[in-house]
Amino acid sequence: MALQAVGYILLAGVMFGSVSVISRFMLGQFNPVSYVSTRFLLSALVILAFYLFKIKGRTWPKSKTLIIRSVLYGVIVDTLEVVLYIAALQYISAGLAATLNSVFPVVTVIMAFFFLPNEHITWKTGLGVMLGLAGVILIVALGETGLQFSGESKLVGYLLLAGSGLIYSMGGIYARKFMTEFDTFDVVAFRIFGAAAVTTLMKFILDPNGIHQVTQTGVVLITASALIYVVGFQLQFYILKRFGVSNQAMVSYILPIVSSVLGMLFLSEIITAGMAVGMGFIIGGLIVVNSRGKNAMTA
Image (cartoon, rainbow, N blue to C red; front, side, top):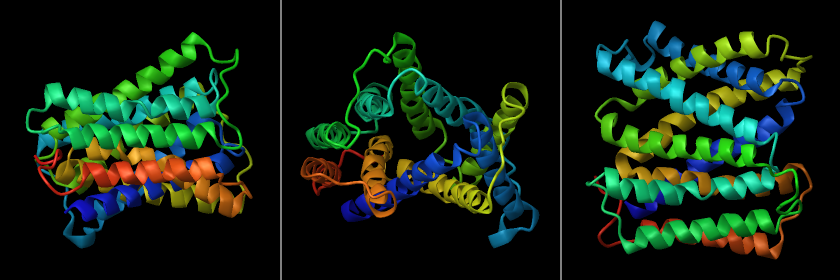
C-alpha cells in the first residue's frame, strides 16, 4: 500500500509537471486565458466522446448531486485556482511563486486535521510534508534562476497566490468530504465540463484574440496536454479517495522535480548538487508519509 501510494503520487506529479513544461512552449502561441480555455475544452471533448460512444460502457451519470458538486468544483476550484496563479505571476517571480505555493500542502494537512476527523494526522504526516516543503525550497532556491525577492514582488501578487493556494487546499478538503462516494471518472468528467464552460466564456469576454499563429507542433502539444489532464485529474482524484487529502496535496511537491529533470533533458538546464538534495528530501517525505505503521491517510 505504501509503495503503491508513492508510485501514484510520482506518476501524477510527472503528468502535471509535463503539462507545466508544455505550457512554457505554448504561451508564445496563446495568451494565458486562451491557452487554459483551449486545454479544458479539448479535455472536455475527449471526455464527452466516452459518454457519446459508450467507450468502456460509460453512460451519462444519473446522480444530480454528483453533477452539481463536480461542476461547481470545476468552476470554482479548477478554474479559479489556475486563473489566480497565472495572475499572480504578473506581479511576482515564478521562482518565488513556486516556493510560496509549496506551503499549501502544509495548510492542507492542518485543515484536514480540523475538518476531516477520519484523516488521522500523525507525526509521520507532519514530518513528511515538512521534508517535502524543504525539498521544494532547495530546488527553487538553488536552481539556475534562483529566488528573486526583488521589488517586483508586490502585495497584490502575494494575495492572488494566497487565494489560489487556499482554493486548492479547501477544494481538496471539500472533495474528500463530499465527493469520494462517487465514481472517479464521472467526477472528473463534470469537473472538466464545468471548467471548460467557464474558461471558454472568460476567453471570449477577456481574451477574444488570445490565440496567435499556432504551429503544427503547438497543436500536438496542446492536444497532448489535454489528454494528460484527463488522465492526470482522474489519477489525482483516485489518490484523494484511496490515500487521503494529504497525499493528494503532496503531488504538488513533485512538480519542481519534473520541471528540473525535463529542463535538463530538453532545455540544457543544469541540476546542481543542492537541487539533487532537494529532490531527495521530497522523495524521502513521500516515503515517510506512507511508511508502514498507523498511516495518516486512512479513510
